Length: 196
Image 1 (cartoon, one colour):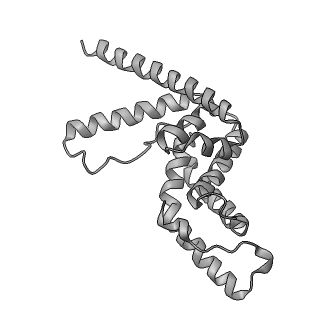
Image 2: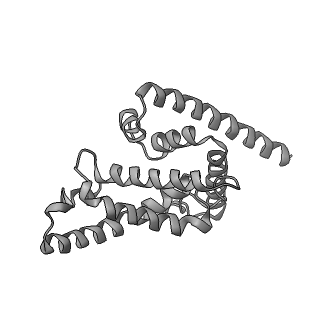
Image 3: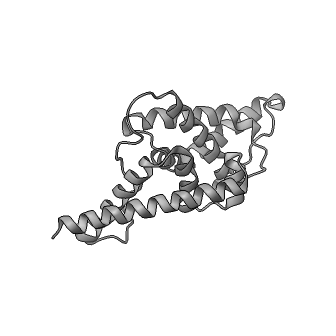
């Protein structure tokens, strides 16, 4: 659990006083500072193009600020923020009419343990390939795959977050894993053939 999950948040905006408003502003600033890198990463993983990431992330935090008083603590704060991010990115994709998902922006930075240039290049190439593969998946499979494999949420958490049954989560995840595995192996085979 992240340290920010213990932030004290008001349960209802209707009961806020001037003191509560100041506490809420402080809580929001702490929430923003803690979750900005994650929200940016999640939006990129969900296929938001690099040129729209700043706007989408800003929209996520506007939605979080507007809904902050409605957070009831039934899930972790991280899961709640993830749900808001998911909703905003879905709305963005729904409104968007042209172009493929994503633009090849990097999913994550290199870990500190990757020091050798050759290892760093291989790591970057693997991340780029995974992002391309994710961008090719349909939205439902991509969301479930990201939640399960990259964010390590349980099937029950995914079902709650996406408001679908556990069986649907299991089915989509199986299909997504198969698609990712097939595309990964195809890309690796193509790379080996080219290097001959």
